Amino acid sequence: MLQFKDDSSFFIQNSFKEFLFNTVEQIRFQSSGNTFYSFILFDEKASVARLRMTLFIRNAEAYSPLKSPFGSLEFDDNTTIQDINYFLKELNNWLVSTKIQKVFIVSYPYCYNTMHSEMVTHCFLKNGYSISEYDMNFHIEISPNDFEKDLDPAARRRYSKYIDRFRFSIEESPPIEAIFSLVKENREIKGNPVSITTEVLENLYNTFKENFKVFLLKDGEMLIGSAFGVRVSEKILYYYLAADSYSYKKYSPSTIMIGHIYNYCKQSDISVFDLGIATSKSVPNFGLIKFKQNMGGKVSLKLSFEKNLLC
Image 1: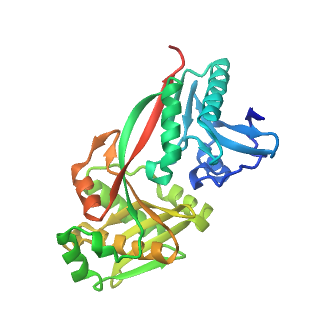
Image 2: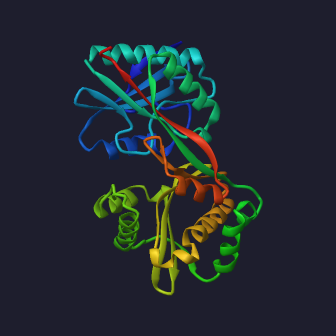
Image 3: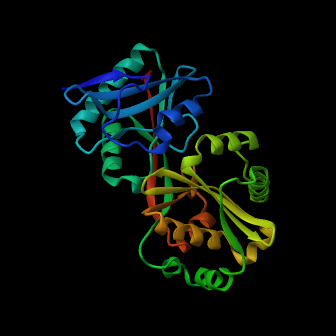
């Protein structure tokens, strides 16, 4: 028998391996003192959670996640549409009884688990949620082929010409301040804000070292490109806080960096290299879309949902 429960202590083990951003360590890291609850669908027979979602509560509103790229529902392959609908109805009863007025949920890209994403979307819509944002997410499928095989012809020429010009490295003790300066410079040139501080970035890296790889590209001693590779799961690597030096734009250091990381994924038995979204609140960034397509990126949806409980 399956039961709906609140398990904020995370005492009950899951019957599935969750994505990094939904682990208890990540939940506690992003909470920043905000109240959160972990809701589960408990399988009494096996004494495990078959489905889990965490909500952060702030000002009579509930969020999943609070600060990470996504939260939403995760569950094992034995979970059915009926199970999810039961969970969402019981969750709605809890939210209403707690006087929560609105719920905001960001789900993982479809490429992470297409079947689960389709089930989640169906059940959210059936239970009164609406799609608030529909972002375009791009990923590269890792194959035995060389990276340049799927590149746009112009990108392939630049990649072949400059791949050996610069030094690529994976750093165990990365220069966080230098990386942050490059990210800040890169964002300011493009007119984009930096949504993280040096201190938070350093704390994030030190707390989750096992899941983070730092990739650097240098011309001699000059840092011209950087990116974090976040191991979201055993088979998925997320491209995070990528930046390159504007003065080296003609060499396309981002293409070189992505090529090296693609090779790292091949060696590490990673099958999905997630390049992230190319939209902001559903508004497309056409330049970024073209760049990610030129890298061989394939598009999938990343949906956000919301529900007004006062209606």
